[in-house]
Image 1 (cartoon, rainbow, N blue to C red):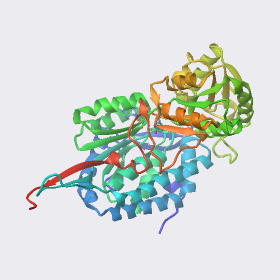
Image 2 (image 1 turned 60 degrees about the vertical axis):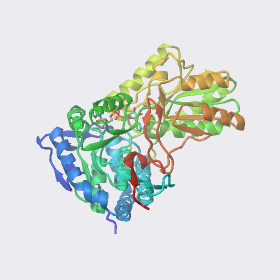
Image 3 (image 1 turned 180 degrees about the vertical axis):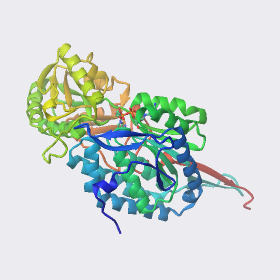
Image 4 (image 1 turned 120 degrees about the vertical axis):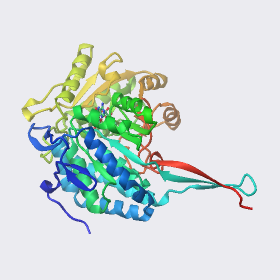
Length: 490
Ligand code: NAD
């Protein structure tokens, strides 16, 4: 049996610790605002280290029973949670639009995407196999079993307020771990709603605990988890500098880490590509969430022979994109998340133009629509000295770089400390094989712009982090292997 909630019922403003909604111990709150209007949606708990610690205490108490629960019982709870997410997809989608700004269709799509991980890991919970190791010595039995790693701390960004945390909680719970979590300060409401549904689904008290904090207070709150030896794993999605900080600060208690960090994705269009397909793929990959995703193409390399034609085709399609508030059903791009984000986009475009880029379409803010709107933009004649070539712009801006041969394109694509997603379009099978093998990235899209799937291993190489989410590999990050050696068998 599932239950459908009104949006107002899904908006929770307290922390969720030990199965109860509780105010922050210091009694403070901070505002969560609508990025399109600046209006306050709710005043949520301003947690500190004491609240983080209380969450860990609850997770530690709940761990033995959850670890020992039958996998099929953990799976049933996750399946019920999945059903509640699907049943409430419209209202959760509205909540995502409200606090994050993405159009409703994308918000609802994110709910279904996040829910797909919950269903996937519900099934995987019952398939955590070990190994019987072939006998090496008479009278000795050897085997390897997998066990939950312990308490997991999950820290997530604002760009996918539901999917990023679902992708962490689901495998952790499936594995038998208990969780303490902190969503991004811009978008805690969707995560709190998700936890409410998890409780409704039967997740026992203490198994899943969530606290909210402003960016300032996130530091001491998370520091408590980093120093606490009971927390055995940090799973983080966010920027590379913060990921490095977490790795350094958790070294004192040698925690296992999964780090899903920033990208600077290349998108290569070869002379032999199907140009219409490449434009469609680029639009899908680039403009999802207004360009605010870690797998968004940030650098588009186009071979000289098709450069002008591709630029024309692309600019025409980009100029037709509808920028509007999330409440407008025709909206394809909403507001950016906050003033800091839109200032960075404007800075990158200005820097590129000062260094010789040509604006083919867009290139300006859209204050007439409200706060934080930026026009979808195509820039021609981009060069490697521009800021947008080295750093994620995280907005609706496509810079077009020109290249002559395949080796140059691969060199340029790999010339970055990051290695999350990459894309290329070509119809030459031998080139496809060569380029796919040489790109330094955790994910390669070949003649395809939409890569996300719960069945696929998602994650990066180089400074985009380590660990994988989704797929049959996704549980490994939450398990440790125990070797059992039994003597005296003969
Ligand atoms: P961020 O690193 O600023 O923040 C992420 C989370 O970390 C937030 O919850 C924030 O409160 C917390 N945080 C920040 N500083 C902290 C500190 N010193 N101590 C403890 N917690 C701290 O990232 P963001 O701006 O929210 O998200 C955008 C970034 O996330 C981009 O770089 C994007 O590429 C990346 N991202 C990566 C993936 C992926 O799967 N690889 C997915 C989505 C986003």
